[in-house]
Amino acid sequence: MDEILCLWIKYKKQPDLKTREQLIKNYLGLVKYVVRRIEMSLPPDIPNSEIDDLISCGIIGLMDAIEKFDIKRGIQFKTYAMSRIKGAILDELRAMDWAPRSIRKKARIVEEAYLRLENKFLRPAADEEVAKFLNINISELHALLNKVSQGSLISLDQTWRMRENGQTMQIMEIIEDGKNVNADKKIERNENIEILSEAIEKLPERERLVIALYYFEELNLKEIGHILEISESRVSQMHTKAILRLKTKLNKVRNEILV
Image 1 (cartoon, one colour):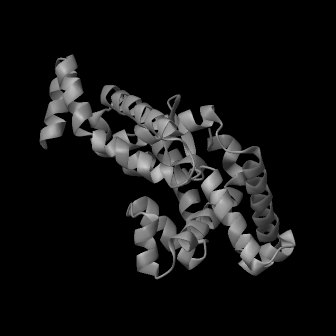
Image 2 (cartoon, rainbow, N blue to C red):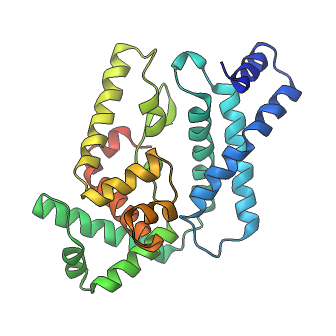
Image 3 (cartoon, rainbow, N blue to C red):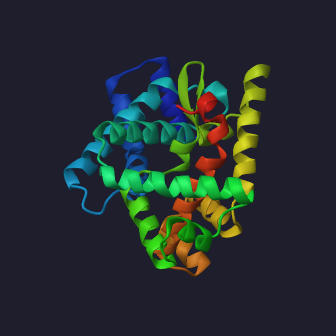
């Protein structure tokens, strides 16, 4: 059993401010890491003061994780804490409503294009087809994807969230939690994971790889670009396209499992 988990067990047995502060200090780097990853999806001119606010929200999410973590669920504290930190930051961003209305409108237009074309062709739509549908050229489409990527927080965590026992859970947390679940919940969880897995499997190969490297291997866009031998901007475009495709594929079950 690692030292930090022992510290958490000590805190749960006898809660005290000093032990909680030590836990927060040990995981402060995790909060900053999550903020840095989310910051890549924010407009480049977002004030430093708002980034500081996100760090504060992340710390609140970390404190929530310390209080609510259940070792019996069979997941690592780090995994659970990251989920709660992300959730707190995403909730704050939604409350701030920082994304320009014009960017949100563009995101909806592009998402609608993917939805219509993939319903028509029953396969992922190519860039050329999307550009033609939008009556723009390829360069304009890539520029549009860059704007959507920078101007709206599109992430797998936001695309796929579900309720369990009245609480919001993110897909990464659900995937990790494979123990101590009753039969009905286990079946429901497995069905949800299967739907998402099938949607990811139907993505174009390189977009699927970007999703795997970004969310499961936790590489940043620059590192992914180095592996794929493409620019960071191009990786960002592929990530945005992948998430837009996933949102269209998950639309049929959205009302049942999305928050």
